[in-house]
Structure formats: C-alpha cells, structure tokens
Image (tube, rainbow, N blue to C red):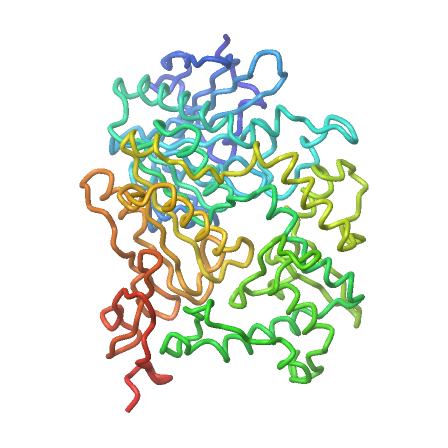
Length: 540
C-alpha cells in the first residue's frame, strides 16, 4: 500500500484548501486500516485551515446551527474489494482542536453515498466526521457513469456497494483512522442521514447493529426498489390522459387543499396537521381560476390529481400508495427542474412539457430498462406495473431497508430516531409509519430504543411552512449519553410559530391560548374539537 496523492483519492476536493508540510496531519502518521474483504490502495491527508463554507446540505444534518471557522485534517482512504475492480473512497474530517471525542458518519441522498459539503455540519460542533462515495460519482441524480457495464448489464458490484456494503466498510475504516489520529477511539459513534441517508441509517441498524450508539434516520427511503418506480406515477397519468397541466394549475389545486383541510386540527396556520382527515376531491376544483386568473383548473387535471392521490391500482388491487394531499406537486421555479417534485411540468410559449423526477427517471432508464436510450415519458400503465414488479424482484434485497427485526440493534444498546415531514414532496411518510408499526408488531417494546415522529407541514428533509424539529440531534445525543428518551421534539415554523412534534402516533392537540406557542398544545391521541381563529387565538 502506498501513501500518495491521486485525483482518484480526492473525494473531498471542495474541502482541500491548504496543505501543511509537517503536521500530525500526514498520511505517514495514520495507520493503514485493515478490514476483512477489502484492500486499502492509498491514503491522502491534508490540513485544512479556517474552513467555514456552509453548503446547502449542511442544515439538513441538524447538528450545528451555523458555521464557524474550523481547522481539520482531511483524510481520504481509497480501497477496493479485491477481484471486483471497484474503487471506493472514504472521506474523514478530523478536528485538530476541540474534538468532542465523538465520531459521526454522514449519509447521502438520491443516488449518492454522501455529500462532501456535509462535513462542516459536524465539524462546527466538534465531531470527527466521515462519509463514503460508495464507489461511484457523488452525483445524487445521475447514475449514467456507473450503473451499467454495458447496455443490458448492471454493474452489480457497484450497486451492492451503493446499497449496503460500503456503509460497513466506511464505519470500520473511519473508526480506525480516528483512533490512529487521536491515539484513542471515540467515546460515542453516531449516524446521521436523511432520504437515502435515512435509508442508510436503517441499513446500519438492520445489517450492522453494533456499528453505532445512536442513529438519526430521517425521511428514510425504506422501500427503494418500489418507490423509485412509484415516483413516476403522476407522469404516467399525464401520458394516459394526454394532458400536461401547468405548474401553476397544480399549485392552485394544492392551495385549495390547504384551504379545505388546514383547520381540521383546530388551528388555521396554513399547515395540514391532520392529512389523514383530509378527503378533498380534486373534481371540486374544476373551473376555479388559476395561474393569475389567466386560466381555470381543468377536468383532466382533476383526474390526474385524484389518480395521484389514490395511488397505483391494478385489477382492483393497490400496488403503490398514493401521494398525500398535503404534499406539493412540484415547484414552479425553473432552477428546480427535475429535482423538486413528482408531478413537475414546465411551460413555455403556451406549450407544457413533463419534467420527470430525475432519480426516478434514472432508475427506470438504467436499472429496469437497462437501456441509456429508454424514454420514461412514453411509459404506459401496463409498463409501469411491469417495471414496479421487476424492480422489487431484482433490487429489493440490495436496496431496501425494510427488515423489521431490530433485536440485535436492541441487544447492542443502540438508540434510533426517525422523523418524517408530513408534507414531504418526494417520499411518503405513510410508508415510514407503516414500517414503524411493523417494528412495533415485531417488538412491542421497540420504543425503548427506537422512536418515530411526524412533522406537520415539513417537506423532504427540510423546508415547507410547517414545524421543523430542529432539536432532534440533541435529543438523540441526550438519549444515548444521558438515557433521556425524547417524548416530543421542538418544532418551529418559518413564520416564528412553535409546536410540539409528538411521538407517533400521538398528535399535537390545541388546548387553548396562543396557537403560535407550543405551550398551547399537548400530545394526545387525537386533535379534539377546540379551535383557534385566524390570528391564532381562541374562538369566542
């Protein structure tokens, strides 16, 4: 094994700002990690001084609330699984001062194993951090460079690397590097991820239950093999009805849903806290003005929307659950094209076109059709159901994180928190709730080590008008290190309102007082009947 600097090794290039000639941050001072089934090819180490760039993904990890200049040792370990010809990079960031004696691994999103800009979220709070590229490009929405060995032939090694294998490798390598650099192991090890990172967190608990003391698995992509196909259902309906609604038309339907269902929880705040009680029929929106009153909502749009809400049914049987009525269809901003919703469209010069969600389109193209030239915008309903079946059959065992027996994680003393925004525009919170229910069926005492929370009005991992649980990370650390299990989380909205985020299946019931203050709510089995007016005060 050679210690050298190669382009292959620089997976944290965004963090590589200044190299020191003689410091403890040297590849020669780091013992080469050893782990069964892999071979380390090289190690790179550079000191980065006063780094404080706060990337767009950093807040998603909910660790540090703001950036501060940090100096750290930036280590990249490149390795392979001998005989497979893969090349995997693990990027580890080690604070050179004020280390809090904790290690945290950071998850990825979409098709990416990790985000290099995520390090600062942990470094700013004193953590040693790590992530993996899972052996391929860290582009979260493009698999064209690695999915296929050739048309018709999946690169199964890279898919296995992406699904689970490199998650264990990263943990073993990173812990050894941490111990080598500091001369002692971390006192506590944590996982933090959302979306695919949430799926990765569940994989750690299910497959590698001794790896982490605490796991935050937010908005997890549990049923990967199924939802990546299901994400395309809205576009299949547009194809079926031969109609592409304008984004503003879909947004108008969403606004009518909010108007109809906002107060089902007793509070008018622009947030649907009780989506299960919302039964708005899109047909009731037909004829209503939209798009700055330049047009009206059409019957075809209503039919498409109702089909999206109903879910994918075949021969009278549900094949995929529907999108929640509180989930927005997609942004109207051009810069978010292909990444911001499951029913996104774009109109120019009076003509509208479909914008499929890129992760779904890539999955259909490269992993199911296995054909770079496949066009998902020609998919029929029959082909959709065929792809749905094939995806689960071929990839469920590699990509899904739906194993409900967490007994080994329990025995290892681990603690895990999952939360999911009820207005998640990409992943269905009902799928997460269903998984948690199944865990409880398997082990009725699972709340002793695994707790789930639903955040009204919050989008995918963050965003939306609702109540974001900003203290969830501190709650996990307190549970692991102090034995203080969280009964509720602290939710805060962009409008400055606060609300308790209750442990599932409880909800935040309004009990009187200022509806913008968390003290006016209690966690209860249902919402009750008390109501607040538009100003957030009790009705007389």
